Length: 183
Image 1 (cartoon, rainbow, N blue to C red):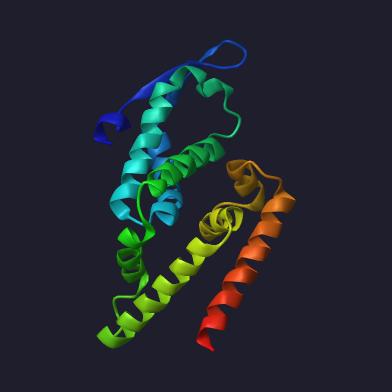
Image 2 (cartoon, rainbow, N blue to C red):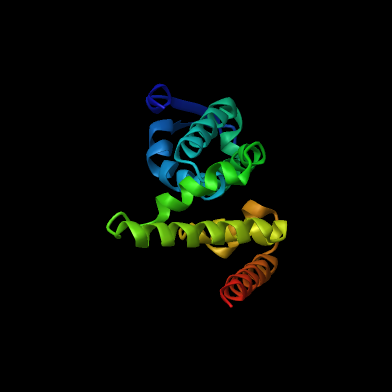
């Protein structure tokens, strides 16, 4: 990303005047959020970093149209989301869930407790994969706390009420399945 960070992109706004966007400022402002969004989908640090780089490559490719973008943050999140989903389709869940589950476990836990916790996290991830597509997609976005319902709706191309309903159903179904597995 070092090659990207020093760039200033010029573009015309709606009125035709020239404006400049400091790409380094975009990277500094949004890279963390985009990483969290991508990581919630691909569950791999390296893959998420690649997604973030790809987002900013897309920004550079579309620099002439940046003036038409109303909400830069949502537009960037949508690009990261779609790129992450594309990468996710190429990776079998079992290829990354174990490592991802282990990365979620606190390092201060004793080895036996850490193993138990990693297995529990892997079970949650397996159940997450079994959810219907809409429910499966809304949960990772909800986990990225900076995104509100309106922004999630825009990223997913759904209404806010549909996102709230999906989120409720996903949480309920996931809870039922996980508690049902304990019996």
